[in-house]
Image 1 (cartoon, one colour):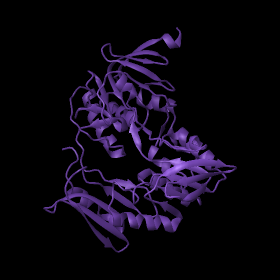
Image 2 (cartoon, one colour):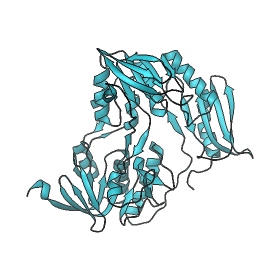
Image 3 (cartoon, helix red, strand yellow):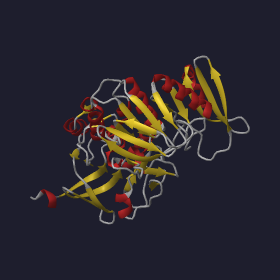
Image 4 (cartoon, one colour):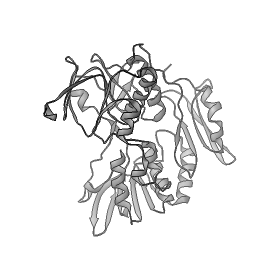
Length: 389
């Protein structure tokens, strides 16, 4: 039969082979060893740890070395059918069919674990198209190839990923310039004093900061890139990496009439408004929250697996601090909920810093721990309210 006109069926079909897709499969298999599962992915289908992309250089690991399990072994271990390098063109939720580049697949339950794309800034200049992003292993391989034998890397964005890559690159002996419109690093996550500590440690390691400004143009001049900033500063670099944030992948869901906001909107059981269609991970929005971190994905996968195997289970999010992978200054953040009233109280300690975000009546609503203060993680996490109770 012509592969492109083939039809198949599976009790559970999962679209996306990132951490969300594979974790929900692992959780299902703990509960049900037999239920037929098909994984559809536009990637090769291997498993790797995405968080390691921003620390691999210092760890002296090439892109290929980050693959922990090839697709064939994942299929064998988890007893599933993998359709790799396969695009999903459309979802027909009325007929419970997805249309793919390898034919139609009918499903009983469909899980969208589509992930998110790097945001691309609209940049000017004849080399704007040369700006790289790293969102998966193939991107990372291209980035490593681009910086091989080079010396200078400019990073757009001083958020979590920008700071992690900056630290990794200076540990690899690169000169690094970081550019951000915000007045500080990790602008959405930490108070000014904490940011100053992180910036000074990374500056000492070799990072140059350019805050309160944006990139006006990027132009190639022979072997180097000339970056013109809005404040008039000129930066010469070999490679430009954009790390300005992520946007959930919504196109497939939107085309199928599935409700979207910031992400694909789901209820506490991770159901979309389309029957038998669920979403989790970086593409999903649960009660207004899109949390593109490892711990929320693990929580969601555990809850969804129970629902998919017959027992409806509501997702809860405990407090889930995030470790920022900046060896220059160990940092753990648990930001307060968006728009919540309170203020930061910052306390420098020997070899570190503790910042507490407290409500007017003194309740702990968020924290930042740096250096030696990271030892307080367990104690302070217990004081925090749940993100979704």
